[in-house]
Length: 358
Image 1 (spheres, rainbow, N blue to C red):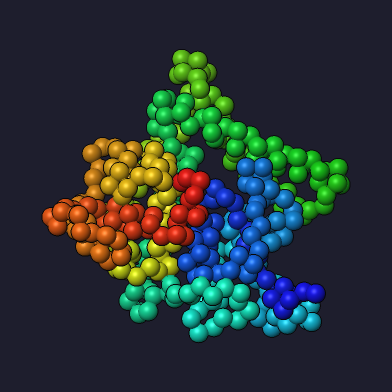
Image 2 (tube, rainbow, N blue to C red):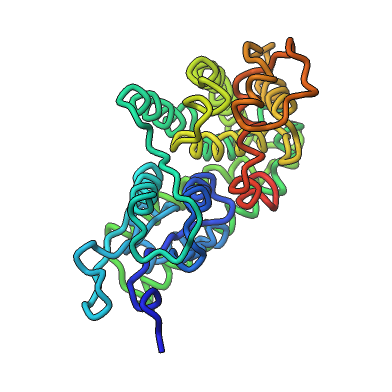
């Protein structure tokens, strides 16, 4: 016999394990104390192009993850046929998860874990939080673009080609197969969907003009390939130069050790995921401390870029509830390093990044 909690419609979180923004709601689920049976986790394998499948596009026409599909509040009774809505923006998803489980409301919960409020308590803090989240999701800070624009010379391009070339080919092949299935009536989609597929395939093919030759020297390239590589390097250089202003703004706006001080908030979940990706692209690992991660990012950006070390290490550790008795009271670190040291000690971070940064 099904229990009450089993019969009540549940939310479903569509995610990809290596997606930066899908990591944000995964962190939120842990921080909010959701039970493992309260939200269905449905993995979408982006490396195989599953996000372009018609069944997923019906949920999220943008083909992005995460997506949270939730039962409408008026259809939560087990005997009523449920209707659902899809929440497609990371910011909105984590806000929904925060409000849906609070110290006051434990509707249909199976977990006895604490449910701390992550939404900022004041108007001023809410404004600061939204400003930082918007910055992290802006074009100059786009970590997904930087994933494919992470080479500014032949040596770096040769290094990242073995990882990225198969991903681009898999995406292109998956979309091509879907277009073929539509042409042969194995599936039936709208002309709008076909055009969407064609645009995404064209974008991947443009990148493949670079990565299909990524392991070749400049002398081995024909003139069109040389031009594609040159334009790619210009775009990559521009992208990483943009990060200087983004990181400087973050350094100025973080109170420390967390974004709004000593209490974790929604903004910290976005920053944790974003910084994990930027750190990985810069050669850092999950085992590194904050100083090492920031040093790796600074070196990768190059041109002598440095963030100010204007935050007391001892104070940062005390505010984060970490031991500080052996720390030199005069030792200083960047606020981003202090954030990293604080966030990586949380059980949520350790679980989401158990297999390394992504």
